[in-house]
Picture (cartoon, rainbow, N blue to C red):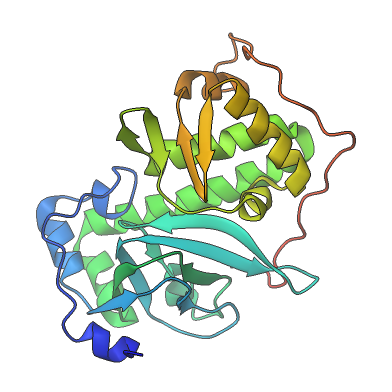
Length: 267
C-alpha cells in the first residue's frame, strides 16, 4: 500500500477549487486565499484516515482543500460519536494551535480528500499579517461554537422531527450542492451518524426520515441525502415561525436523552 508520505510528495494544488461562501477559504479575497493555500505542505487522505486524534498534543492545523471529513468525540462509554462534518474550505485543529492543549476531537476523512498541513508559527504569523485571515478564522470558530450551542439547546427543547430538519437544513445551506432535483448533501452519512448529530435514537430518526421521504421533502439513498423542498424543510425546522409545517412528523413515544458530552472538556 502506498504510504501517506509517498502520496504527499506530488500532491497538486487545486487550481479551480470552489469552496462554500460560509467556509474559511470561501470568505477570503483571492490574494489572501492564495497566500494561505501556499502555506504548509500538501497531504492526501483516503477514507478512514485520521487527520487529528482526540487527546493527542499537536500544534499544526489542517486547511481542508477538498473532500469530506467527520469530527468525532469520545463519549463517557468510550464510543465515538459524530459531532460535526467539515468539507473543503474549512479548517480543523485550530484550538490546539491557539492554546497548546490536547486535541478535543478526532477528525477522520470520509473519503478521498486533500489538505494543507500548516505549522503553528506560519499559521499564527498569517493571522497577525492578514486581518481578513484573522477575521475569517474567528468567524469559523464562532460558527463551530454556535453549532454546538444550538445542538445542546435543541436536545432539551425540540421534538426529534424539528432537530432532524434543522441539522439537514444547516448542512444543506452550508455544504449543499444544487442539482436537477434539489440540493444534494455531499457528505456520506449513515443513519447512526445522523442520529448522533441530532441527539436522538436511530429508530426515531429513521421514522422522521421516512416521513420526509413520503412527503417528498427529501430523498435518501445509500449514505446520501437529497433535499427536494428546502422551504418546507425550513418550516418543519421552525425557521419560518409564521408558517406551520405542511406535514406532521412522527413524535417519539418518550423523550430521547442527548448523547453524553465528550470525555474531555473543550477549551
